[in-house]
Length: 570
Image 1: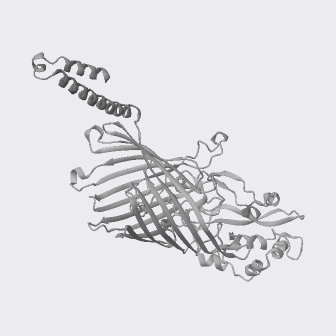
Image 2: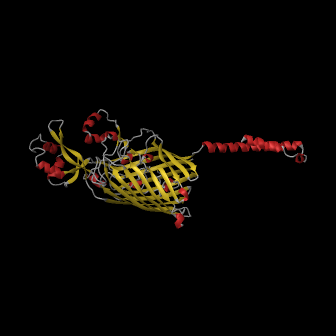
Image 3: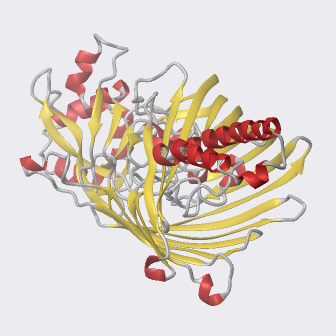
């Protein structure tokens, strides 16, 4: 570049002498000095642009959110028990397998002594052939976490690969203040750290790849495009309003808010129909790799990969109206995913009595363990339609209807099958005190093999207000509602997965175009257990509280989550 400037200056000095004669030598020198300064300044700017083009191939942007939540749980109930095959137990007891009830040393006599109330209910015909065997009376309490601070950092990146090829990605970190362990005690499905939900659950100060993919547009001059990589499958419509940002993902946020790796093939149908923004997409992904990384060289793998696929159609997207249809299927869903948990010592007494003895010497220890599924439990269908409208006066509103259907395959793991519990049967085990005793042992049989339909409605409105905007949202999920929204970063758990009612009110104060404060509250009123999990039978919260049903994890009745956050975008 400097060589070019020298040549330009030399050319100016070679101006014909006839022109120079018209001006004085001093005047000419002054003009040359001025032009030299201007050219030097221009040279610096051009060099900066060239360096940016050559070196900074990726454009970075991001946002940082700090948030304070105050959490208040009401009537959290622990009801330990199992779904037990009383018919099998009765037949075997009558056949004498468990000994003579009149002999105090027999397994059946020990059982009656250990569980007199349950034995009385059984002998008086109070149990169904298969029913809950409650080990101990329910324990109910309120829990208050007055303050919980979190920080969420998201770093977005873009790069232009070619005229019709782009790369996009986002790194994220989401942590509790004062905690970078990377694992949480398994006291809810929200505490399970795994591939699909890491972006939405606090997992320490690790920066994870939430999304990374390329878009190959207008392939061969057609209306087709191809996108491959870790998908933008979170923060989809209409969840962008409560996030105070633009649409952040492709599928309906009411149905899918879950990280996965896969492929999207899209076609811009609007080029033919004339309907603005009309796009048809087929999406495919893999939710679980069963072989690699699961000890396949030991040749004991008994699970299949989980495959995801479906259609996502933006029927209208004209900047004011947005209408979207989603139809999605998950094949060979497993009874869990690869993940990391801190084992709750409370489970040890029931599930690992030998380890329980050792844990008494280390009451504040939780061993961290990797978990992987044990079996495939069936398929899940999801469908929905959502509509949003952004009015000229600044009012935004939306309505979304979701549907799920589970199709179990008759199998169950330790925690259950597809919306079913595992059935336990009586087994004779050595008694540390001598002889044998009866223990309930899990089987691979689910408590139900029925298809179950679930549905949910989700509505909301956001209106202009002094210094910002005010929003109200409500959603309801039925007993068998089973969406893939577990990566939604609500600290209590995805509100859109609630089997029951959830309402939210918030106020957003726009400090400047790149900075806002949000103050609000979410109220959860759970009607059934297991919100957000396809594993285990949903039972009424009131039945768990009454002691007529059990829940492997604590059953929560109501929760208030009040929050305030400050977000800056850069």
